[in-house]
Length: 160
Ligand SMILES: [Zn+2]
Ligand SMILES: [Zn+2]
Image (cartoon, rainbow, N blue to C red):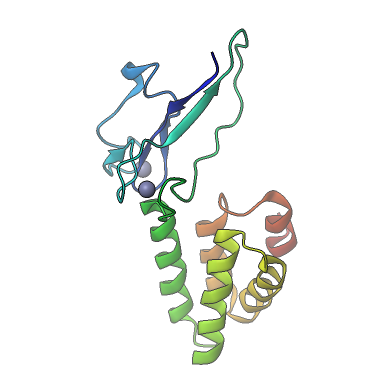
């Protein structure tokens, strides 16, 4: 029988284990990376967070990618929200962007996180604003988004 395990993830987004159900001994109450509380369910609707996909007869590992949104209720998981808030705060720090540009930048961050239909435009804007917001902001954005955006997007924006 093929089935999804349950993932345990800290509220900042560090994956503790993608097999919290089948290997409960991997569970931790707190994150050993950052000390934050861990969770196995959506904070809004209590649905279990999808973990490793077990396939009968196949023993193998793949890179488990943590979800950004709950597939049951659509809420952003806490780590996604925090990433977005951190990006917004950083944008507010920029002295080189006007208020209108800041709002537009935030909207593009939102679309990039959501990978939405207009995300190509959002990516272009994101890139444009990152380069005009100054190198401090660009560096901060990289730290926040390094494991959120796809590799191709990352390379196109930051070059590595
Ligand atoms: Zn953590
Ligand atoms: Zn939910």
